[in-house]
Length: 321
Image (tube, rainbow, N blue to C red):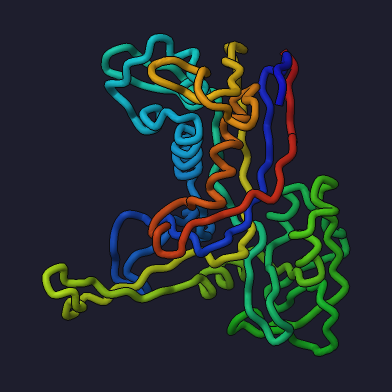
């Protein structure tokens, strides 16, 4: 993304979970599972907080740039000129010794767009009309939802269709028009004929009833055996879930340090080639997002959790200065 006179730009991102994703609440509680994941209070739907996305992107972009000390709070970070560091310029900084600098990127929470559910017709990806329209998808006005029915794009001849344990009246012929940018995307085309939409009331119940739940046991470090009475359960957003979120770039300074080399020694942009050129804060963010596909986000990433792949992104709003 090159420099321009835009006051701000807004991008919408689509990601797909390659592994189960566990963004924990940081506490245990009595209930169906011991370690729960973060949810939206109003809908009770799982989400990935923007702070988690921001932290992972910053950490991985710093690694790629060869300056890991630019990640985190770095209260005692010493920099000759913070404005020349693409990581600090993009994400901001606060130090106790040299003041702070506001970041140029803001990230919203990632919401579930399409949720995978098992059915007698095979795997289906479920959503709601409202959520799809927020993300830029088009649904025919003739689709009128109730709490007893499911609209589906699957070629299904029976009167009912189950979504997990829930059996609903099946209405076929659903046609969802995606944004132009993903119409030819292979990932989209692989599920386009396996989509279903339900009411918002049912969607929350379906999602929370079909999260991945695993059981683990604490290990005694002295014996190497399982601890007595130390079983615990935890939940996760299942793999192949699609999520979406907004990113706003507010480069009010318009002084981004164009970068194509890594940090070396104590000097910016003189090391080995990055393999790409960072022309804007959004380029730095995208470099961090790319590594989430391999290094993951959230908890238990060394145990098969956390990887997500960016499907695509597109500009949804711009403002000229």
